[in-house]
Image (cartoon, rainbow, N blue to C red; front, side):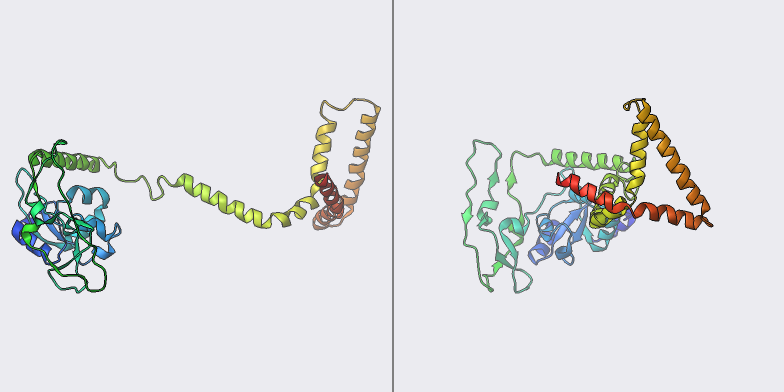
Length: 309
């Protein structure tokens, strides 16, 4: 919202805002503008209770910190006015929820019902609160929680929303701290540090883990069936293990070793001639696979025996 549009908004004074809150409107201050969150409070992703605790208060820092830029732009549709702030900022009103009050089930404007088990009461709100540890505690007036479909109707007056006097708090310093936070946040936004490098930034490791788990789950589903498929070609694994052993340093280089190498050479010569005699390459591949797969039951038995042992 531009400065011209903001200046064209109706100026709401403190008394009018307090009156509208007592009538049931959920008014929240954001960047000197007044938001009416009543229509969409039940659908707030952060819960309606989060909004109730900011009714009548300046929630600029919280709204800016927890909402994206598109969401902040959509909030402009619910601006109903503006307020003027001095060097002390906006003096917060007391949210009705902090007084233990909620909207009455009858839905009538200005009707409230007791919700909390303890309320400060109007007399206590008019006292001065001191943060000195040695000061006496503020008494709380216990009340009975109202049950049933027709709780007692409570009338809330604007004066009851005025906060107690905080003698030990410098509102000007508190406002300066808030402005410093907002300036720091704007510097971070201008530097582009809030922008993610990509749509999946930060999730790469998790996505890889999920894909690995999905693949493992699919493998386990077919594992008991793949066992026999793998063993049907186990003879090729025996070839590799046998030849690596024979050509390695462990076996003796004696006559038996030479005899075994000669037998292997004879076997592959004879087997190669059989493959060569096949008329097509498809038949050669078929003969190669069938001749090895037919011997796979032996490997299944050997594997089963060794597992049993």
